[in-house]
Image (tube, rainbow, N blue to C red; front, side):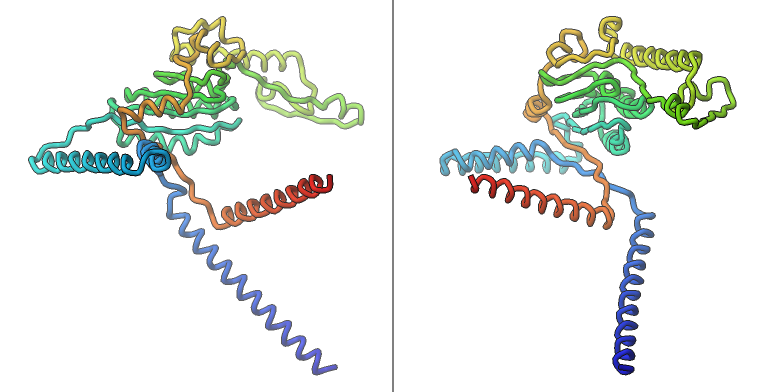
Length: 355
């Protein structure tokens, strides 16, 4: 028995030592990664040619539906044209001349807004990157989707778009689904604003709401005190007793915010009948065109497809690097989601087969 206890103790000590060693290694690796991340940027800019994507799709379709001999003939002609263009460029450079930019460029950005306008961190990086190379002959297209949110957050997002306007770079905003409230605050900055036929546009208004539990607390003999320094440091509270004076001050602040919102929109779209459209209402794309909230009704797909005929179109995105923990979490969530989907599909199949 004594020998067994001794052997078991030795085995347990080895296991503990092994686990401790593994933990130290993992901790060391994590520390190295953390130190490296401190000296590295969080993300990087990626640029993809939309023209090349469309050309690849066209080639794939032609390969499937066009006669093989004709497809080879088209490919041969395309290569011949590219060779001639490369030869002309080489000749221009050999002569010591600067090659002329034959086609203007279009830079495509995306903004998917939540209530906090969280995507503004990516947007500011993308705007800075485009401004490093774009000139007044180029165009920027923003595909915007947002139902609005916090005023200060969307104010910052709008200021990012103002950077294009201040440098006389044409800005087009495309709305396929919704640009309301803070979303429209961003959209109205555009030189050219287009929306899909049933995209929701407008909501030039301000809203605030909060519950109040004062009567509930009072019913249970619970006191809640709000101590402030400054007459209007706190107007409405969730747990305290709200006064008519505080309530009126809160409404006044909302009205002032609404006035600033209307002035901002009027500055960028002076053709609007502000008393008519600044009611907090939203309109579908076709109705928004009638109210001059947008300049054209079309989808971003059609707009960009047409641009690719005569322009070089590039998608620009700021890609954030994921940590090892984030990647592992994503893989775990994906695996769990896949497992649950398979289980649910089996349940549905069993029910179907049982019938």
